[in-house]
Amino acid sequence: MTATGRSFVIAGAGISGLTLALALGQRGAHVTVLERSPAVQEFGAGLQISPNARFVLNGLGLDEVVGKASFEPQALDTYPQGSKTPGHSMELGAIIRRRFGSPYAVMHRGDLAKLLYDACRHLPNIDFQFGVGRWDAASHERGVTVSVEAANGESRNIGAHGFIGADGVHSHARRHLLEGPDARFDNRIAWRALVPADSVAKQIAPDRVSVFFGTGFHLVCYPLPHRRQVNLALFMPGDKADVTAQPKPQRPGPAVEAILDAVGANWTPWPLYTVDTDRWHRGNLGLIGDAAHAMVPFQAQGAAMGIEDAAVLAPLLVETKSVEDAFSRYALLRQDRVRRVAALSAQNGRIFHMPWPLSLARDTVMIAQGPQAHLRRLGWIYEYKAGAAPS
Ligand SMILES: Cc1cc2nc3c(=O)[nH]c(=O)nc-3n(C[C@H](O)[C@H](O)[C@H](O)COP(=O)(O)OP(=O)(O)OC[C@H]3O[C@@H](n4cnc5c(N)ncnc54)[C@H](O)[C@@H]3O)c2cc1C
Image 1 (spheres, protein in one colour):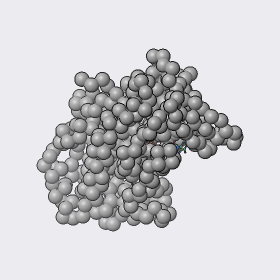
Image 2 (tube, rainbow, N blue to C red):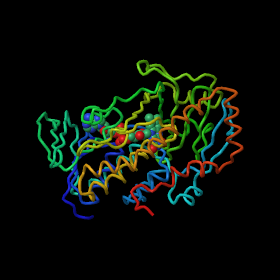
Image 3 (cartoon, rainbow, N blue to C red):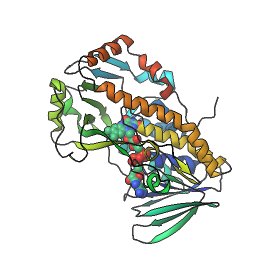
Image 4 (cartoon, protein in one colour):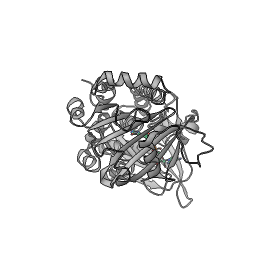
C-alpha cells in the first residue's frame, strides 16, 4: 500500500463503488463509502464476468476468491427460435484464458459484491456508512464538502479531496450535483429468475451459457453451480408501469416453454434504462459505473465497464496533482470506449430479437463465422487492460 494524504467520498456500494473503494484504499487513500441500503446488497442475479473485468479484479488481489465463487462455462450456445438444439456455439473456457490472459466466468452479483466488501473491510482506511439518508456535495478550491444525514437522522459534514457518485442508473449525483439527464426507459423489461438446477436440467446444459432467440425476445441461461441454481434472464418489450403480469413470449417453442413452466410466477421484472451523457464530472465531483453510463445488458458489459472505470480512475485520483484534472483525464480515457460498448449492446438487442426471415439470415451468418469468430469480433473488449500502464 502506498501512502497518500488524499481522501474521497463515494456514494453507492454497488460493484462500481466497491471496486473503486478497494482500488483507492489499496493506494493508501482514505475512503468513506455512503450507501443508502442498510447493508451491501446481495440482491440481483447472475453476472457474466468477462476477461477485461477479471483482469481488474485479479489486479486487486481477488483472483483466488473470484475463482472460488464463479464458474467458467465451456461455451455459449445459441438456439434458433423454437429449436431444442443449439444452432451455433462460441467457445469459451480454456481458449479465452489463452487468448486474453484471464477467464470468462459467471457468478452471482451478490457473491461479487460480498467479496469486494470483505476485501475493503481488511483495509483500515475504508469506512462504510450504511442506511444513509439525504446527502449533498459541494466542490470548492480545497476539495469537497459532503453533508450527509445518517440513519439516525443526524447530519454531519465530511471534508475530502473528491466525491464520486457510484449511485447507479437513477443517480442523485448525476441529476442533482452535475445537473445531468434522467435515465431513459428502454421500453424493454428484463425478467430475472433463479431456479434449482434440477428443474431445468433437460433444457440447460450444465457447463455452458445457453441463449434462446425468438421474435421479440431472448432468454439467457447459465448455471451457478455453487448455489445449485440456474440464472435466467428473459428480455422482452414491456411497459415499466405494468410489470405485474408474467412474461409471455410469442411462439417460445418447447424448450423455452419448459423453462417458463419451471419458473412459474417467480420472475422479478427489471425495467431497463440507459444513461447517455458526457457530463461525468465537474470540479472535484465525478461519476462512475451506471451512474455515468448505464447501458442495455445485451453485451453483458455494464458491471465490467464500472469495474474498468474504477481501475482507470483510482490511480489518477491519487497521482494527479489536481483531482479536477484527474476526472478530466478519466473522462477522456473512458468515454469513447464506453460509448462503443453501449452502441454494440444496443445493436445486439436489435439482432437478438429479429423476426423471421431476418432471424434465419442472422443464424446462418453466425454458423458461417464459426465457433471462434467472437474472439476476433469482441477482442477489443476482452483484451483491454484497464489501469495498466500503456505499453
Ligand atoms: C438483467 C441484467 C443482466 C446483466 N448482466 C450483466 C453481466 O452479465 N455482466 C455485466 O458486466 N453487467 C451486467 N449487467 C449490468 C450490471 O448489473 C450493472 O451495470 C452494474 O450492476 C452497475 O453497477 P453500479 O455499481 O454502477 O450500480 P448499482 O449496482 O446500481 O449500485 C448502485 C449502488 O448505489 C446505491 N445508491 C443508490 N442511490 C443512492 C443514494 N442516493 N445514496 C447512497 N447510495 C445510493 C444503491 O443502493 C446501490 O448499492 C446486467 C444488468 C441487467 C439488468
